[in-house]
Image (cartoon, rainbow, N blue to C red):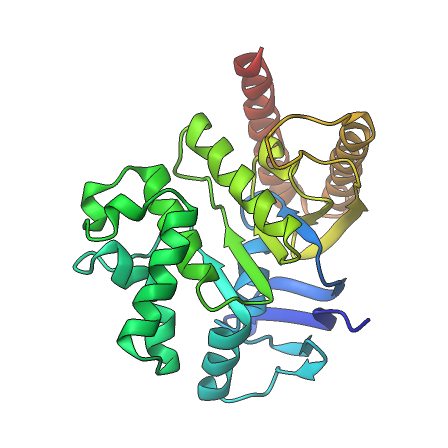
Length: 292
């Protein structure tokens, strides 16, 4: 079976000369149809840059990107927009809904770009909103909805074209715990229907829903683990002992990588890295205490 995504030697650089920043460094990655992939990593690790390239919102500096077997690295912006419209559904942390359009018009928007007739696109949007329990709010404005409802509208919009791939950038980042669980349960349902989902998240509790976790650091893939044991679509936990062990191993591998890299840096840079690592450690301890 043809992978939905293949990356070969993918790199992305910003700036020129001494001001050059390497956001992605020689990424090789294959994602199969039907996978639910979580991409994790600290701020600045390159995960959002990778997501933008996967979504054809940005282009790599070097390397090749194949989407469903087709090379897309050197396509024009127009062709990229068409591929994105027909094959990719995108869910953003900040929802990105049109504030002056109704809920149903927001969901129908991708079908407008396809040139579908108004009756057809509104019927499709209404059907999806009913699926997400929002049929009574079709003609509400975005400001009249809660955060969880807004994200469900954003998911409906991403699904209205029946895309093969769903890209979700921190889909629960602006939501409370209860709303996050609802959104992740709905994404799990979508995955069970055969969609490929690629999700950027910093939250291990959200990553549990994925069956594959990619850890990034300094623009590289530090670890890539598959976990058949995930949460089911009702949100009830299946046994996750192997997942937890794998997550711990990935975290330890990242720590060892950072320490080894820091030892090669000049003292001034090493001190900055050490301070940043100490801050992350304090945040992790604080997070664990809060969960207890």
